[in-house]
Length: 248
Image 1 (cartoon, rainbow, N blue to C red):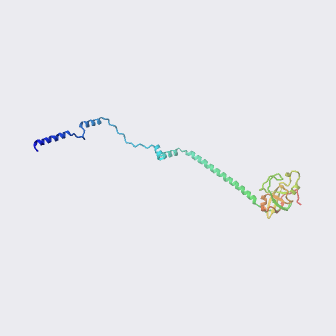
Image 2 (image 1 turned 180 degrees about the horizontal axis):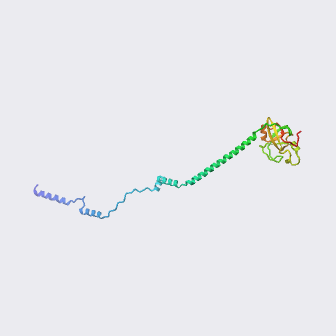
Image 3 (image 1 turned 90 degrees about the vertical axis):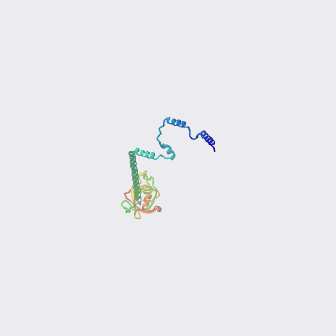
């Protein structure tokens, strides 16, 4: 290749390189202008980084329960604000009230027990006393029982009383007037005896169905000397006081 041709190729290559401009790099004037603009802007002070505190209400709504710290604070507040003196006073009053009620119940049970014991003892206690003969007797007759009410002597009695009704023969023989309540036999005592058991009773009534020496008594008196199933038994009796009548 001659010198002229090389020169021509060199010039063509130079023209091509000069016509191609770099794409990736901006002009220096633009870079300088952009840097100056950023430096001219006022700088903002950065805020300190903080973690937002969770909302207690929203946390409670999400979890369905009160936060632990809040529960502890509420419990301690209720503990210190509680009126312990008033609570102790009310508790003491309740204790005394309970003790009083228990004492009353025990006393009532004791009274009932004593009453029942006395009634049972009175019902089932028996004696074995001889029949006196100084006031008339002893006499022999039938013993029956009945349910007393208002008797001929004007007194109202019950099944548990130690009373009797003498025959209408003796009652009418001792009568001194039209008022049976004033009969001399009313209130007088006699003793009946059967199988080694004796009971003292008081006259309060008149027995229409009895024979002269028969006696009609309450169930309590009858049970002391016989079983109720027997209904009618033979017994002996005698007056414990001087009477205005004699038995034939």
